[in-house]
Length: 71
Image 1 (cartoon, rainbow, N blue to C red):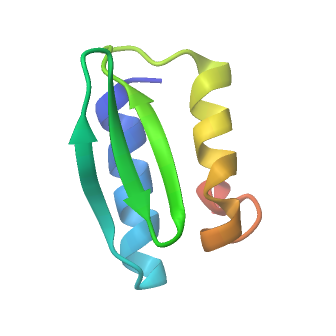
Image 2: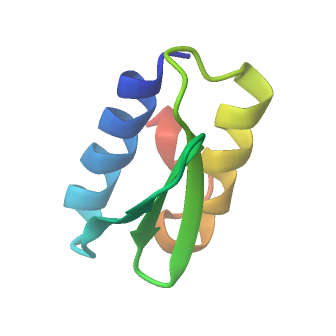
């Protein structure tokens, strides 16, 4: 999955939930984002591996509900 598509998908889900999605900090190889109480790390590559993107999306299930990205 492309990184920009992953971030766009999360931002769309965040808007629907009403909890802010915000950038925390930037590292050399990754960025840290926060959605409510959940903090996630997103690699800074054009392509994010499929397993990595699934893990990122699953980490947000506590805030957005189960399988929120498939709706």
